[in-house]
Image (cartoon, rainbow, N blue to C red; front, side, top):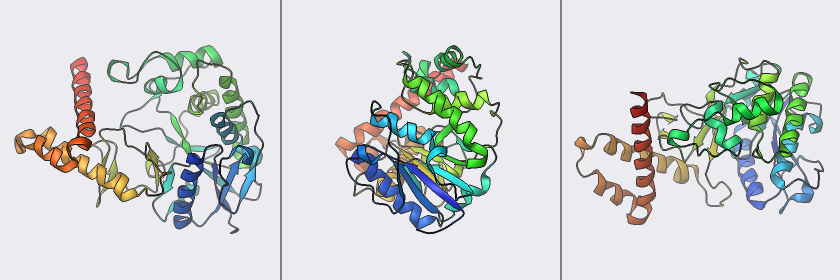
Length: 337
């Protein structure tokens, strides 16, 4: 194993799907980073062995499911990583280093800990995240895109008042040190263990991350630039990609060339997966389709061209998603005006 002053850290345990995803992420990180790489896991849970030279085994509580066990390990990394590195960068296994400047992430550390904002869409905040953090009746779509249930749950459970319009942090990439971050991470860990016992809270770590940030008055803490955790959610109908310009969460935003690409809803565990074929080309095709739908007067035959491009069967789903997205946009504009 290489000996560097900083190290990347993954946490994975359980199903083969997640370990295969990890193996892909490891390969891309090894191509684009020089720092050491550590994997923390509970080997007794794993369906297949983790193929990596530096694996740390930590036994997790037997009554936890695999998802809980992974979050348990992630939020307690300060207890398990070796003490011979200056800085650590945690990566979710669905994060790919797509640029050779991956090691630059360590230079953006600001004590006590540094995350990126959670931006799977152009606009996100605590209220918008509610339906994904607690088991409320809202759907996260249209008139229930935002709700008060997460801020209410935080107040009731932890006695903390959180601004519902605060753009919270994403737990998929963060930089920490043992010297500066241990207290924050221990509090995050304990908060997370509390919600494991409450069926109203979904099994996630981001709701309790919001809690921990506000408990420590860190809501104005500097964050990582978006390029170090660009969330490419393939379910985001407005996600854009152009080969010469890069990615954007919405056609109206400037393009970004990510260093870490956080790939939601992409089958990274598939041995035939390809960044070009499974992400870039479909997004480029979607961009071309969007231009014909948004400005149909420029091409009266956009509907025919769409099905020529996608085929009859595969063309139905992106067409449906586009129509739903457009209706949602129209609805929001109607409510605004």
